[in-house]
Image 1 (cartoon, one colour):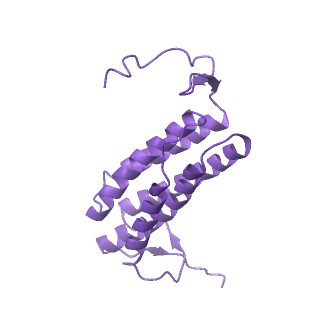
Image 2: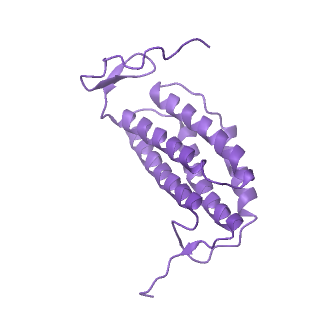
Length: 182
């Protein structure tokens, strides 16, 4: 692969527009750019989470997820472009099922916290939900792939399960919500 990013600044966005992967230009505050930004932020939060000590069984799936999120961003950046395959949804579901089978059933709501890694994972989960909401909003106005929508929905579920696994493997209890008004 050649030097794809040989020049970092182009000055083409100084007027408040940005270029999409198909060569068209749109406003930087458009829904499409916001959706790309939320997916990029999610990928970054997962990157921060991965700087913490994590159970080995989470590293490979998280690395694949980062690549998948880059692909989701590509699909958003190039209207009509499809790269993420349906098999990735099944892969997420398989990881969810495998990890969740090792956890005790939930009886209470969980608050973000426990270990630092789990707290970062909860942050990733909430950013994922925001990215999903933004993509749904974009989908109401412009076409986006159903696979990307499904992927973000399953990913937030997986991240929740991963939060629990991280705490369990570290020997730290999840932070349970206490309803003091019940």
